[in-house]
Length: 403
Image 1 (cartoon, one colour):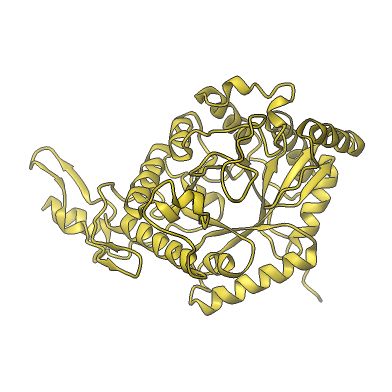
Image 2 (cartoon, one colour):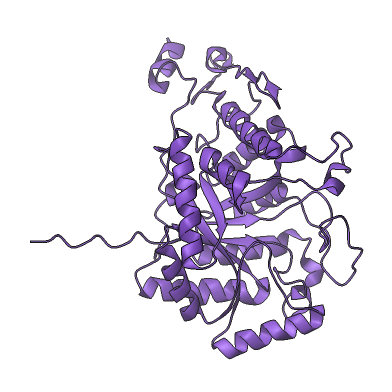
């Protein structure tokens, strides 16, 4: 007698938040409220909507220079949204206003120090009580390097991705540099911290030499979740060797399957095969109650922008929530565990995701009906990792300190 196959695991869903939306004319749409783009109220409202839709997490896009449609520098355009709030600080501002959803700011690691990033994300994890993540970005652009004046492109092939891998390693070691319960906080004895449970990480690499320890206690998750986007080559190598989540453009099923297979093989070769790895497909979405309305809206936005919209990082979908659900479930068969969706117009397409797509997936048994964990690692089915520097269990150490 054959045993019925287990049903597929529910999908994980995230949404990428950036300005008024992914389309360059999104800020001109009714309801976009461009005057509020740089206010805490705007971002708090978006994250609250995403949490009402039971999404796993939101990512906050960020970058070092002004946004540009040109790869060589600022394009000087004044008809598109320019400027952003800092992603980490925005996530920290909305954290106390939410309870379950993960908060994952983007950071360009090419020109930032891992010590600074480690304590910023650790702080976010403490503020959110275990819902922080980090989205790692690499920049090879000369005009971004000129903002700092420390490095001169061009960079050697793969160099920046090797540096990003070292950056991630340093950040994780710094998160572990405080053992759990290193803070004693014993008023009677006057001991706030057990110094024996703070550790130098003594990292020596080609790109960084960091002694540690961090100045921030170990995050509630132990190691907050780290994600990275990939489009092949060295980017896939970074995902395979260093990430908890990889974001891949969700093109046709065969292309996605080949990318997933390549990354998982590279994961095995890196020695991290036993570490869980989520691979999320990426799509930019324009949703309406019927397909022609969604496509007409996209055409109208293109007319406002003066050119057809094409997303370099993700394929574009325009249609109904049911059609999108069909596509996601079909792409999942290529080995994806979830999707990060980019609303074309946040004011319109974010509610269409949370109130249209989510109920459609729930009807098909493909998405949660309630939050089942209070940490981002928990939502993603990831265990809380042990501290690499711990020499004795936390309970034993606490008892010894008390004695």
